[in-house]
Image (cartoon, rainbow, N blue to C red; front, top):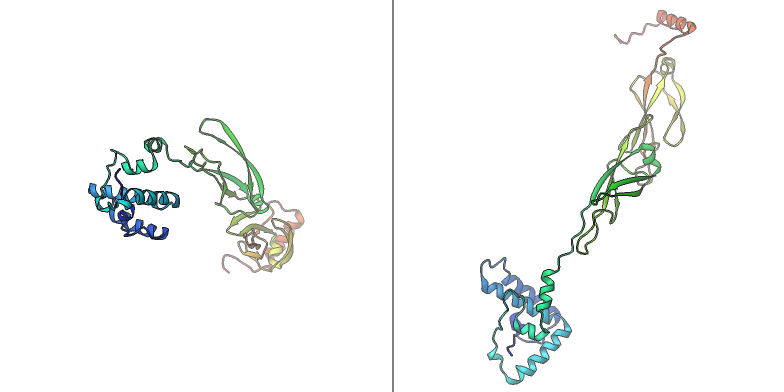
Length: 298
């Protein structure tokens, strides 16, 4: 029976070494003889296989003890270290004949290793849902249906968290495509798109709304009630406000995910009635006669 000196293969002079020393020696030798470093060198390739073979035996306490006992019995006691000789490696095998004798016949194991496919994780799947600003502010439940690879429809109940941002994704673990060969399923990512509402639009954490005013309210100033997303607020409109000017109401905007809120920004829009009563018409005529204001010259 031909024996391999696994300690010598790893560059160790004695078997009185720790597992950590064996690991260090293995890393050094594996780096030295790695095929990527020694392209086209068959000798280095074989040596690299020997290094891995030696480490497989010596890195495990049970197999290392068995190896040491057999070495001492068959080689050490006969002082035949100088007769050490590399045993042949069966064609296409990563293990030598000595390894096969040491651990038993591993041909079956090699065959199973070759035929066994690597586990492949399933692909992730991405889809979109559209929600309103109010749904995003308060949180909501959405039901979506997707067609699977086999053509069947599968439904999911999606919980949209409070204060979700436009463009954020909700992740459903394991609801993507199936894995292969025992691999995990992929995940389902649901991208949330927040659409504007009739009353509100959203920019960052700020909510925008329109504040409709009569000409007299804009000219004289007033206090009006305005609806925010979750209550009604009384605000003061300064005299002389112009169309397009904005009034900012702090902490009445969209949720920022940190316990705070953005601003509610009201844009003034001065509205003129399309049809005037006779009394209104007379008052506007009087204002026209008395007012010297001309927006085209001032």
